[in-house]
Length: 291
Image (cartoon, rainbow, N blue to C red):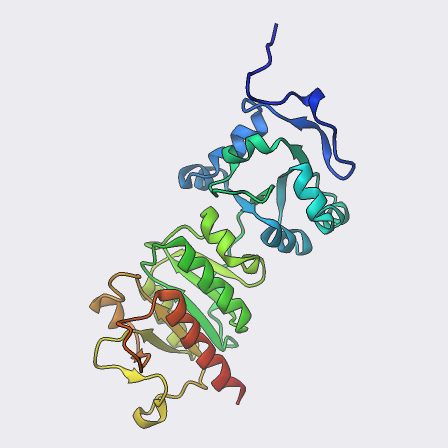
């Protein structure tokens, strides 16, 4: 005979929210909870081709678009705070299963989960479909390991109207939960390419008519704010390459680019972090292309 686990509410103790699917998931031994929790690890994401989408904004964008959704979990409290998610899920015929708040740490890596998590299928774009002759602005992350920075750059690229983001095979997993959260839903707005080498990307971009620019402060480098003095034309179709947070681009990677570009520092700050530097470069290109 099964016995209730101390410390966890039982299904009969929790009423089912009218917008959610019951019975309420309360056991950490639930197969759905255990399978979702495994997706916190890259190895399991690679094996299943699934990933976690957490937080109201990211979930909202996944539901509003055509993201392939496998499963969904939501607390009654989150359902009360985000009724629009219930409506969007209904339109997509997606079941949001009610979960006890106590179980959220099993499927979330945040300190304070906002109570809604989707399991989605990974979907990436082919390099040749993104780096094409019509692309005006592309972004590459090479050896970028920080998930927060990677996600923020994807979000900025989306906001600036970039045609796509390419994440090389030696960078953070694009479907890392923190990357996904940091995109705030932009992961579902523009094509993302993964698992490629930088040389393959730069060679294709150059063949398709894009100039390849490395964001790198080490000389020699063009000054981003006075490019006309050095013959740099930011209105041209451009592929930006951003390197690791700690060391920037190694010489071998920089050699694959047509030119290096530095952001001038007018105050006393020693440097800018990756996401900030990428934001400035990407928007400078977007602005120049609109002029």
